[in-house]
Each structure stands twice: as structure tokens, then as C-alpha cells.
Length: 130
Image 1 (cartoon, rainbow, N blue to C red):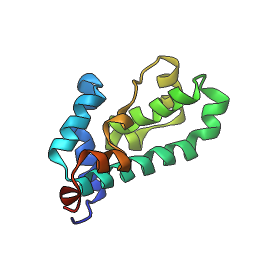
Image 2: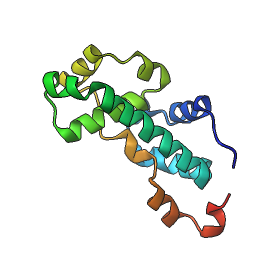
Image 3: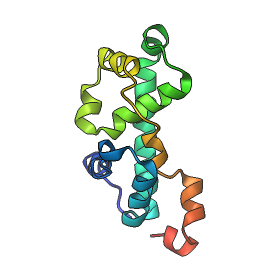
């Protein structure tokens, strides 16, 4: 399976329509129905990369300025990704602080993209090779 571009990966995040209902189980079913295991793994790796980048860039700011738990910090970063590319690129410390202060995030867009072990358990070996 050819490697998806960043543009294609952001397109799949947009197709999830996270803001519609914040239903990660609905989105997971959508992804499993419409993406091959290889594509799912690419989307998962892309999500993880963006999620970690937010954590690295804003970790100190979160510790010093946003009064939310570790678990909420995970959800907040996932929310930024779930809202799509333009939101991700426009995020600032002030936006993150406001989102944290007003509980403007949900649990958890990241749950909608299966991790590799889940992908392997959900699909037969022959189909995973696609």
C-alpha cells in the first residue's frame, strides 16, 4: 500500500467529523470500514507524531499555566488534532489555556484510531497484508 501524504492523512481526520458528536467509537468503525490495515497504521503513526509534537512544544506551558490533569492534557492535545489541520496549525498557548479552563475538549479523539495491536487483532493476517 502506498504511503499516504500528510494532506491525505489530514483529510481522513477531517472525514471523521469529530466535532459532529465526539463519538470515538463511531469514528473507529468508520476508519475500520474505509481504510486498509496499512492505512490505519499510517493514520495512527501520523496522529501519534502530531500528538507528541504538541506535547513537546507546550509541555512546560501546560505545567505552568493550564490547570488540568495528565489525562486531560492527553485529551486536550487529541482534541486539537481532531478539530483538523487548520485548527492544529493555529493553536497557541492562549487557545490551549482557554480550552483547558472552559473544558472545551472531549475524551478522546485518539481512541478513534486503533493502535497496531488492535489492528492486528481485528483483521485476518491475509487482509492485513493489503
